[in-house]
Length: 425
View 1 (cartoon, rainbow, N blue to C red):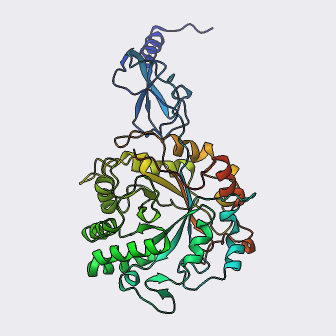
View 2 (cartoon, one colour):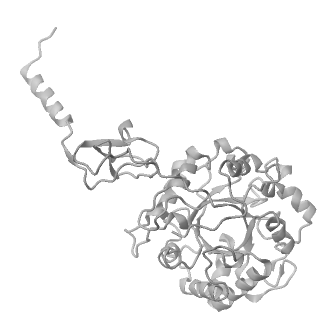
View 3 (cartoon, one colour):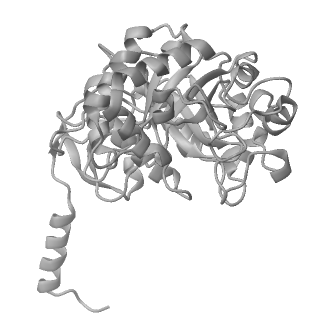
């Protein structure tokens, strides 16, 4: 055996000293929680050891499993028992809905034969045994300028697409499924801007009348990323609320007023800043909740969760900052279709709404500066029937109805029908 030299002993000793972890003051570190989503740079304590996330966003990785966590040393002063606390009790999913585009790519321009409509959409109200797959359907879209002008033509009646009528609304409501109308969409950004500039207050009043007449709520889908007319949108909201005040009990369907924000906080920035600061506050709420829109197709569960976490955390580095959003004021959105059936539609066990994908996060995510209860309100899915020419329809002729995806998830999560009163904090 070759004898070790003094130089080698000194090198080995230096390595041992460098590799030893010094005592660490953990009194200011939060205890690691299985339910929290951690970003790179976050520090926690776990079983009286300090750790830092040095790599990727993490929720399911225990700190002592290694990467992306790295030990910073034993706790000299501990905040107490990191990692052994009682787990967060999952919140029940209250909102489980689908945007519905009809059979003509979201125009709803013609009156539907209800027998044919039922054949194409039966899965929404019957996943098997007569139980609905959803507790909310959002009929998409209403053209803002036609609504302002109360246009009647071959596609529209008094500002509402001809296919969105009482028969279609009652098809869902008679089964306990709540209904809303979405005003806008990415195609109608210019129409939103024109309508708000012309008479935002009257637009809000007209929307309130439609909501009363049909017994539905209204969703704001205003996707101007560059220069949204926030003061006009404020007038629209104020006008709507002058007719239908905020209803924290949720019993007045026409009082339900929501807004779509981007998948995360890096798009629709001005709209998100205003909505989070002034309309989605839990003390004096104006809007009921926000929908985080879908991430790009083929996103991983971690990608999806990272976007939703941005809403929970806010963006304090922005000027003006985007404030944190209470989990109880947010739903997350997933795709139903692509060029072929998506697991979210046809295979719950391999879907993004499965508990080990995003389900645990949705039910347990902790507030981070806004709200006091854990867990988001639930899920929305884009989109039922035929949302575009390049994607499969959720209809029997496409072999793509969603009983095995959304329907199975509705059974697993025991989605309440009808929708219950929503958490306010």
